[in-house]
Length: 277
Image (cartoon, rainbow, N blue to C red; front, side):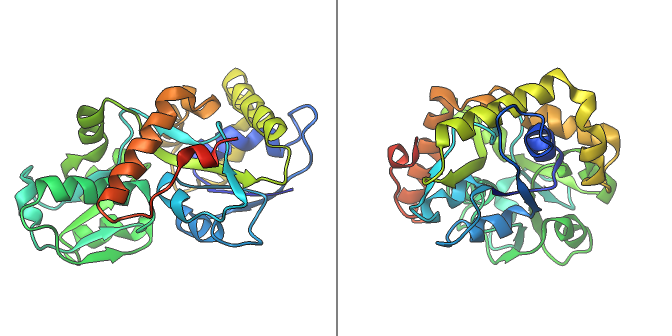
């Protein structure tokens, strides 16, 4: 069975047991590690992988043969994307007409940024520049762009680049909606036994929580640029109760994000109920 997810610590932590034969009854998995921008593009293909991790923002474009699994993804509180600049201003108006680097135009981070900017930045931002995630903070530092939208471990490392926080989009979203932030989704082919697959992924999450030491070598092998402390902070932030079960709050958050984005013309309209198993 082909599965694709990122080499980020939260994903390798969650799927370690599943892909290492530690979940009873689960089949063997052929694993590919890929950045979220790559997996978002794979999700539209008729012959894409059996299972993959994508951004919730990419769900409206996913091939109809895929269903949303209720586990294995990333939602949460206090874990949202950040907008960074070189100066110390916290005034959103400073972004009016400016160049902003983003890691993907089909990401939750991008949707949150556009929704925030529509409400907070007079006249809107200027040019949106898509670049690989690891290039964004250096680009802001070097003045190639005026601001950068960053995710994941950048929350812990942006100070090393001499950058400052303009806004925390997760905090804005939570204050505005009261809901968690929907970041990464797990989708799978409808032709699979989705209930069994969901059960195996949930068991993999539970194994990771019960045996955190078991996955450390695997995690650090795929996170070589991170210190063990930053990798653990990453896991602590992004792996939570929603990783085991989206529950009603999780589905409400997904509907709120994609519903608002559709009204702004950022994504096609989508019926979340159609995606559920």
